[in-house]
Image 1 (cartoon, rainbow, N blue to C red):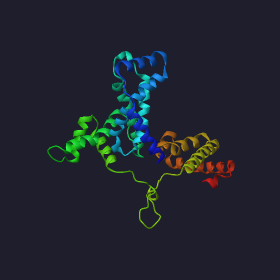
Image 2: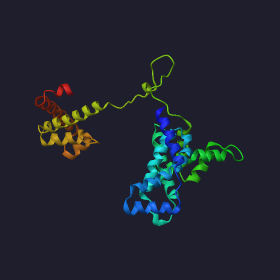
Image 3: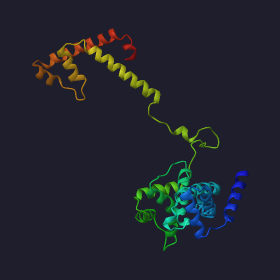
Image 4: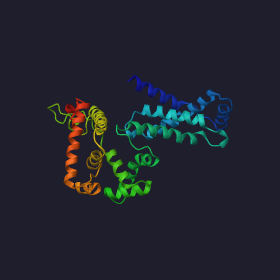
Length: 285
């Protein structure tokens, strides 16, 4: 309540601030630019606070506190005052309008929904113009289908129709809390049904550690094989597309049955080496 009262007092004071003539505005701007006279800059800003209030009123339909919009617009106004170049012979109000609007629009995009909207210039244009274009089209010859509306807005603003549809969906539906009970009686909430099937972070970390540990064990155990056994195991077990017994038999000049026997013996040697070198292998397997 106290904050609302302070906001109304601030707005009332802003609307009562004296106007600046063109010559006085130019002189104050020169004092700020050439002498860094902060008092001059703040006089310019104070005289244009009514511009901030008027701009905030235009954005009131987004449901955000008017006082917060005025505060954000004030930030934009001060930024404009700090950057204003009097030698360009442009009235400060014309220059400051862009900065005030940009500050308020950024604030609305950050706070209008818990779902963050796009920040590109095209997405901003879509967010702030979709309702206006919809209302204008609705007042025409007759009602439009959603497809026709999306197509018209897409052409008008230069954004994909899919982006228009997504933004329309966001603007049409309010945010829903995940902590809202699904029924009047009961403790089940929306979030209870959003189950992530992926492993938990500690499970992922544990699996990564296990994989690395087993890789070290296997590398050490492979040293127990002779050259031909190692070649067969590598070709049969350690490649993405394992070679067939027949392929290896042809390459080594032996029968495929002999290759199978060597492979079986090599696997037994590997298991024995793993158990001997790492007693915990059987628990981890």
